[in-house]
Image (cartoon, rainbow, N blue to C red; front, top):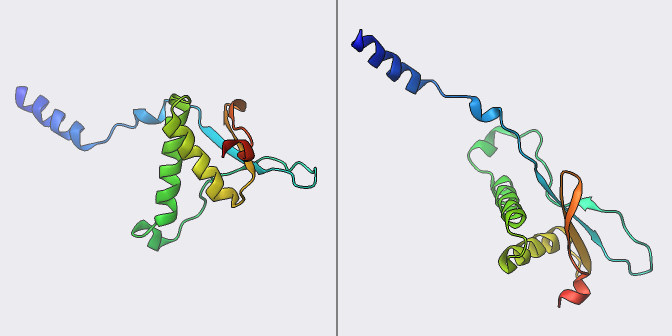
Length: 125
């Protein structure tokens, strides 16, 4: 009987557990907008896009999703420690890269609630 339980344990080790799909967590969203030049305030836009369909070659070579994954990881680190100057600078750099303008502002949302808003980029420098 003991041999059967050993084989059963080995067999269970080969089959993955799917329990990690049961837990859900909130996802932080980074939004930004260009600062008005002529008084017109632009609407907030999401800065870290979600990926849709992928091509087969992206299984082997996928720099865009790699940088997107790293960006989301930096955003999650910022949410866990928003007072960290390093995290703030990383998120500011991400916003600057996506908005491609010297004058911008960004915010971080968690469950649709704003948890952080940057000062205008004119005040940051």
